Length: 213
Image (cartoon, rainbow, N blue to C red):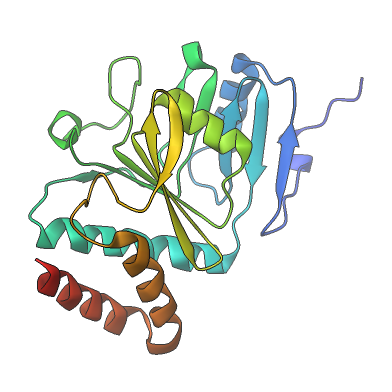
């Protein structure tokens, strides 16, 4: 058997590497070796580990969608605790995932001041966001961890996934923002940002939200 060091592994932007038969201890060791300050994102489910490197355009969309969510929460006066790309994992579920962005909303009060997450006692994030690639490994991990709402943005479209009986079902209505046409609005403003820029788009989105409420 040939053993490779993680330092020998290079994942080009926009690509991913999938490793099979990775046990939980190995997954934890890989997380520790890679550290927290890195560009790669990891997903782990039932022995399959996926390491991906986002493209720059992915990061732009991720940040913008996160900003749109924050505007929604502010204008609707809904409290939240953002947790970004925190690693959410549970050994008893053999699952772990790092969202592009994540928010505690219904459970925000329980997470104030939290610096480390223990999903055996803490709830999963109420809303997670993935941009460009959501693989079977990622989806399985989100389902196992019980994340109530997952947004998947890809090719200019937003897919809203709501968990029901442990599985995701697609919905055109967000459980977090049920009274707003998020399914159509988010893609429209993301596309708008490509021509008018980020700041004008955020201002326009804030005005749009105020008109809706």
